Image 1 (cartoon, rainbow, N blue to C red):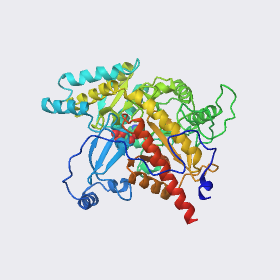
Image 2 (cartoon, protein in one colour):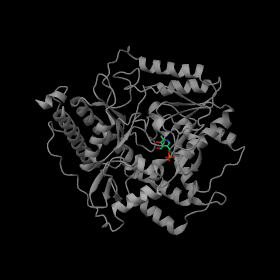
Image 3 (cartoon, rainbow, N blue to C red):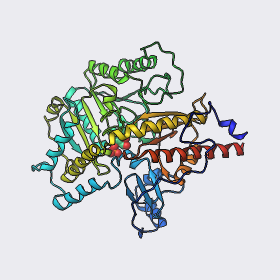
Image 4 (cartoon, rainbow, N blue to C red):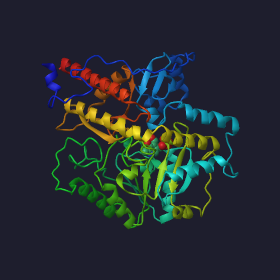
Length: 496
Ligand SMILES: Cc1ncc(COP(=O)(O)O)c(C=O)c1O
């Protein structure tokens, strides 16, 4: 029968999804009533988008039939027609507490009436309260905080700090990484789509990304995730061959592409835009050692992995048992309020203090009050624990779907930082075509769920919702995803 052709693996154990999929269940209930939309028409919005908005916005618009967002509440978004969506992308891993979270919104409202803006040339309680609070979440010696307006600005500043502190220039990042779009951060970013043909990245070198699914090496024990790759593992007990090989690649980069003394090594604990790529256990530990031996500082870009999203820890680097010299933050820090930060050591801060650095908006009272409330909300609502609980369940259920469908190559991640890599088939692991990805993606949206895309070839679905989603939401998504893959496979079989 038709289904047999793309149905692989043994009949799975009791699971929330059925095979073949039944009709998708009703979306979990929500008591919130959005306002009626009375704004401009969709056509008018698209016209303005074409004529007056940065043309890049047309390029990055998701979906053939775009979503016209009107309102949000917690994990939900409503479009201008009143249709509700389960938002599993959260403005690209940003709205961590939930859209318009009542506590965070109340804090912002109160501060709007009190004081919007003043700069650091005056002393105000808001920035000090926040810096002390944020510092309390980081281990020694990471205690000095710089507040910025975005992740790119934070990474720019981190590059500058690392170079000034070490007196060296070369910076190493992973291929496939995204660290921002400013002229300097573009040098760190190692994805063709985000590189412009101008001189950029002078002093920036990339090394092989230790991707244990798509890369040259990897097996079934490599990563710190509830789900391992489908690759065989031939390692001896307690020895990770993939880790050694990828470290060998970094050693080769150090030996051939940079000077003897380097400034920094930048890595996300788990790649974000790269598609939740995870490295072999202990890779970062060994890499940090090599970098420090050459005079460099280690920088953890926690723009996507910070604030408990990975579930097991508050910061992604803690899952690798390393302590960086500089940590960069953005996205979830303000639950959608534009903000970023750097946290570093007093020693590095002292090197940077030789010059004057100032930005107008960084650490303004409104941002600090919002960000402070976000930290409180993460604690009070046990959002980190929720990431671990719901995220682990979601990955295990997604892995069962992977075992059913040939085109789901990999399920990975930690907590609610999840990637589902789509392939043509398991043997070649060739990325599933952009047309196929877009068809499945559109179908998922039409069934009421928003997710993201990423990976070097746009082949990986990314699930990074608000950290407040429930088990019911997870079950609903699994049913939708199951149905969308089934629909795609069925259509494909009918065509061939
Ligand atoms: C890991 C990572 N670092 C840095 C950035 C840049 O942040 P921003 O867009 O706030 O400049 C991003 C943005 O997506 C990111 O994902």
